[in-house]
Image (tube, rainbow, N blue to C red):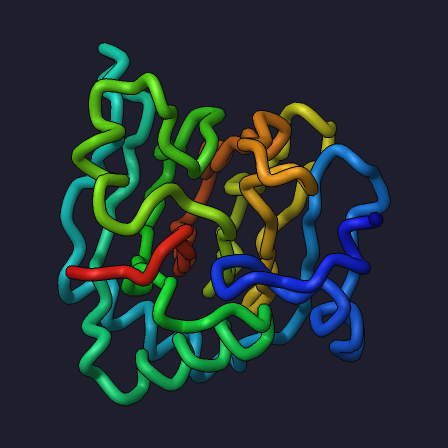
Length: 217
């Protein structure tokens, strides 16, 4: 059965639902289930999120430390899911994907100043990694990622899916959404992507991850 014909579980997106959204684009290759939707958020909504990120940002971290102190040099903000504005956006993302919102992590914001990047990585946690039990013992691994660009830096800052050779440049309000799994449910290494170095200005995004089981703080 083709992935688009498979009935979605609570933890995975409804591909047929996504395909019905006006203006949605799907990457044509079979290696990665990847969508983009322009103007998911308005410029005013993006500006409001940027203000929240700037107010609470802290240095970003990684799971399974690899000894490279420059692997992820951005800053991160855990957005307040008790904030009605953030909660509304959270609900809209889940509705767009057709995923049960109970499986979602709280939305994170990321800020990349000039010179900062996140080197090629996958969003799922490696089952043999030292931090797997810490991050996945309760809610399981990550199934889907939704990322929204909040602005357009002066130069650089594209997202490159290195395995499939797809580079996407930031556009204010544009959402990318991809599955971290293959159609058979196995982890998909072709979801590897690079938050490329910002060469000028500052880049802001928000990211929403979904898990195999309902999320618990």
